[in-house]
Image (cartoon, rainbow, N blue to C red; front, side, top):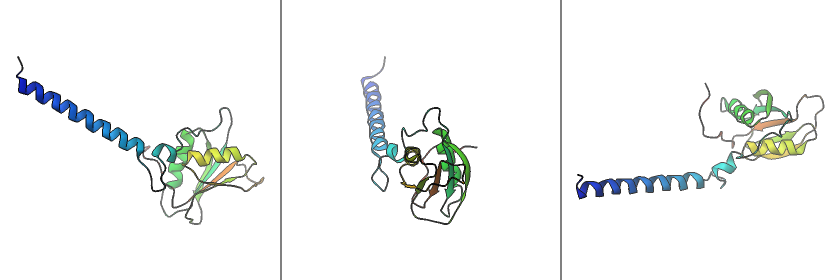
Length: 148
């Protein structure tokens, strides 16, 4: 039979563990970035490509951080967008999304999936694209597993 002190110690350990887990859950769900948005808002919790629609996206890294366009490409592809091209361009501070095909709602969905960005209409019928993304220095890739 267990001693009273041993049972009390187990209950105390369980209570401490539950308290720590509860505090961690609150901190994680209320975590905010430098701009004041929650993590879910910052990484477009539900922004996805429209079902049955192929939204062709170009992602350009406009920073000195290597691999940023690749990380954004993975994020957008996970959300159903068809990233057909990626590359680099001249550095800039903020992220901007260009509507190339006259579908501002698609450009807004891409911006939301990236955690929010300015959307501008820049039609260009010579490109086989719907949206161009210029990733600025302020864009942060979401925390998550690294792909091999």
